[in-house]
Image (cartoon, rainbow, N blue to C red; front, side, top):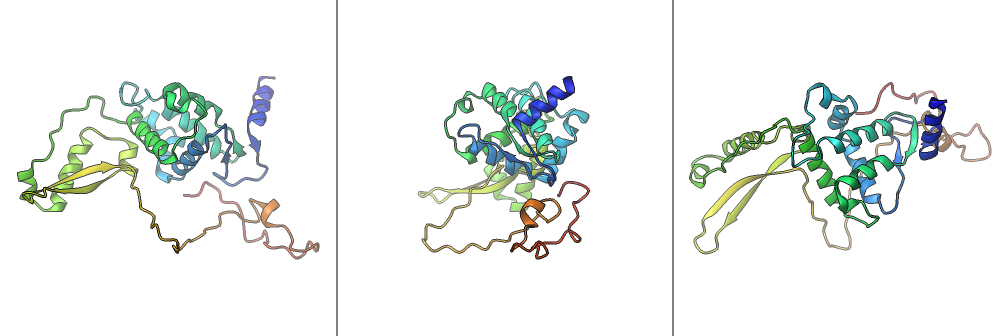
Length: 260
């Protein structure tokens, strides 16, 4: 009876997919949560991070940091991992992220209401939380900034290596491994022309979009759907004749595992 009740609850909150592909799972809008859904889908398609969360590697390696005041005590990371497991279980075509939304709202009141938020800002917040919740550095040491005189005497590759080495003294997580880098900033004084160069870490880079009315983008579309995993869409005949099918099944078999 208990198993039946769990299955009925799952069927009520999620739409089952009879023949899904791995990761082909949409997220329902819970009232202006499209910003959250889009950010979750973006992170869901980071292969190394996804494997880390789906396999619960953070538990096996002891990476889950429950004492970091900058994180959530590992609560949001674990809830996010549970959401990904449902999305990549090949059981659901649509998922209602109620539990993740409730946990998110209890941790950060900014996302508890039904107000619309900026997707990039939420993505930045979520990546920061995942970083701090999996940070292996339990006690962050004080790290001095690079001195201008030392920077002036060394080339950029040497400066970049040293800046990253100092960054890793306080930040060692799966996010630092797969989703962080550093950008060179140069500030020049307009009076004395003295230049100061520093490498700053980042997890997102904003790319400006041209304001011109005529912009041409080159887009490469890779179709994952086949007649085998989406027969109700791709295997429909063009005419009433069922023999005239758009796609055949013989050359399209579902893969044995999730796509990388």
